[in-house]
Image (cartoon, rainbow, N blue to C red; front, side, top):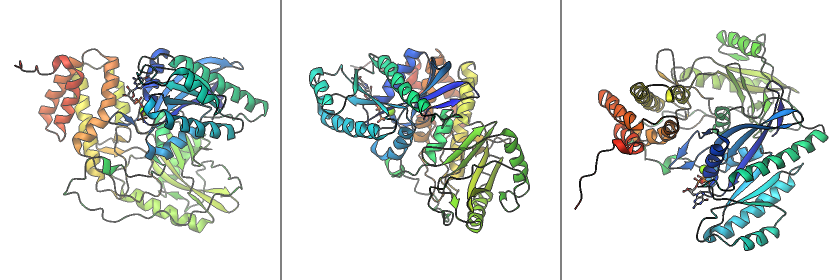
Amino acid sequence: MATIDEDDDVLVVRVVYDGAPLCGKTTTLRALAKSLGVAVTTPEEREGRTLFFDWVDYVGGVFDGRQIRCQIISVPGQRDLGPRRQHLLDAADVVVLVVDTRAAVYEAALSTVRQRAAACRETDPPLGLILQANKRDHDSAVPRARMFADVETIAPVAIVETVATTGQGVREGFVFAVRLALDRVRALVDRGALPRGKPEAEHPLELLDQLKTLPLRFDPAPTLAPPAPDRPAPRSHISVPPTPIAPSDIPEVPFVPDPLMPSGTIWPPVDGRALLGEVAGAGLLPRRTASGDWSAAGAGWRLHSHKDALFGDVDAGRRALIQWARVHTQHERLLSPGRAVVLADAGEGRVRLWQLVRVVRSLREQLTDGLAHLSAEDLAHRLVDTAASLLSAQDAWTRAEVALTCSLWTVGTGSDHAARFVGLLPAGAARAPVQHEAGHLLRREFAPVLRAAAEERDDLDVLAPAVQRGLARRGMAGAEAFASLFAQAAPASAPLAPDGP
Ligand SMILES: Nc1nc2c(ncn2[C@@H]2O[C@H](COP(=O)(O)OP(=O)(O)OP(=O)(O)O)[C@@H](O)[C@H]2O)c(=O)[nH]1
Ligand SMILES: [Mg+2]
């Protein structure tokens, strides 16, 4: 949802690329980013499929004297990722619906257009919608005239024809989308309803954290490698904190971190108060996100409260606090330091449970730093060390009673160099963690890193053997898959095929 970020003096708008699985959303964002001369961030992918989103930041144009910062986001298309898709759509200022126009999937695409057009019209002020007719290069693409006629019967929707793989038409679609977004912003200004403050998410990591707190309608484990046969059974499960109350229409009192809060409302008892003092000094003001959660980030801290962490009285809230304190204590050695849990007044006798997490740099952020400037040998070292940290985190987390998602974004290293979970603890953390086969995990996590490396450097042919040497020194599970990932990206260094008959 658009907002005026007064700190940076910009208008932030969100352009969301929606559409069926494999219609070409990610391809579109990559082509757009290339034409705008900016980068795409893709937190996680599995076999080329988007798991969370693709994110592009672009500052351009002016609205009422302020620069416009566009957060350009594509949703994951897979049916089972619906909650994530919805969360991203909820914060849209305009939707670009990417449609695969090949004949075989055309009818299904039209029904998506019908649904999305109806949903956009229901929003107040209406949400702009553009139809990006993609894959126009395909032999079986439906004729242009037929497509325009069909869409006309649905709603007055602008159509932009594209070939995302070459970038044709993609930028035009985006420029049009921003105009529609600004129409909506203007309507909000006229009503005095344009919010001021930080956007729902300021950067991809924050958005990723939000999505990771959402319930999934599926368990990703079955589609991945089966758990190792000797994996220990989870010892016990932590139940969801007791008796949250249903959200009501009575607005909540916003949480203002205050180190003078009554005792019994902060965990850990002593250090927690000191941490709270630090957070209070940062002047963070949490805001409600589209999913109903509350969150704030800045000055090295993240504050988060799940939408259901609201309790009708202090006793119910205290029981939940004690349960969360127990989770933190049990997993202290696995979690990044600088965490507190706080029970705060929410007004009308209600209390809300918050987690405060000091930001610790993730493995992925540490890697990004060295991607452009390290020598191939040093980068190879760092890549191998990072892979080892990731695997050791996964190993350690199998003993956890909470489902700590293991990825380059959620693992960091503590002062003792041990791998630590740096994300927000999942709400109602009542699930055994999923363990992936080492090679699979490494491929999944490092493929995007390698793509980024390929954009930054032209010495992958040197990097690949350096990685191989690093692995040989270390001896690591999944080493073969890891090495082959790099070898594939550097064809010049791949072993020559024997002369065939
Ligand atoms: N021929 C052709 N292929 C395309 C075009 N756009 C995308 N593709 C291909 O379609 C496939 C899916 O593209 P993606 O961009 O990954 O689709 P997506 O919608 O992001 O997929 P999910 O988010 O994972 O559901 C890839 O193989 C692309 O190369 C296009 O305009 N023409
Ligand atoms: Mg995608």
